[in-house]
Image (cartoon, rainbow, N blue to C red):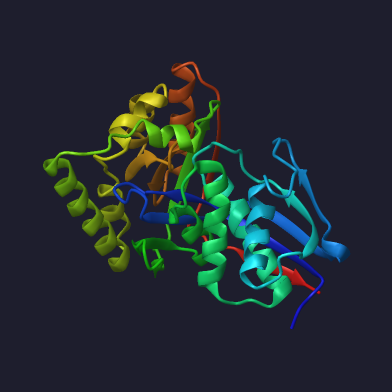
Length: 307
């Protein structure tokens, strides 16, 4: 069965989530993108972006519409026409999976119109949207946005995604008023790492998976460490060390960088308001204003209406 209109919500996410570089992702309950799509005749395609953030409106350059186009092409609808409205809920370049939220939402919206329920197809199309802006087809953010909860891309070649329902905890996020492009944040990483650092990350990643399965929030916080990306990316975020210390002193169970940054997040089971204030204050001392919010692990992108 096919439909003419669909509305989808697609959430922010935290890639890497500590030691799981390009593999771990945590879906957030908020913020979210809201994407509306309706069928148009004669192959016409239109995109409108709402909100305070400026994004491309050309169908081949906007991640949401591009992912939708790729999903339609996969299903044999190369000339599928549509009008899409994207209401952005998060700042691009923030480290919260902004492009992934749009890509996942666009792919899911097109899938809803075409009656496609295969999440593997939706995931692949969403990753193509990510590739449009980041230069590589990585799956950590889009997997979290589509499947919800805590996700692990366990096999890149087969696109195998493991989904674990996380325990309930608060996620406190502070986004300083700077932007970091994912493409640039990847370019600063070394092509090789030491055996010692690799072993550290394998141990921490294994511990994180165990902690998630055991629903142990304190243990989850203790494994928010990394040797592969954070030592390099922290230099792109003024005041990162001070923000990390301020959050920990205020009661955070763990602190890390959201994706490629500049978002810094902490997790807790209480004291969330105090932790948020401490993180904002630390960024202020470093000369940066910041936006901050408190959320929880989310359930993933959802079709809100279909007609």
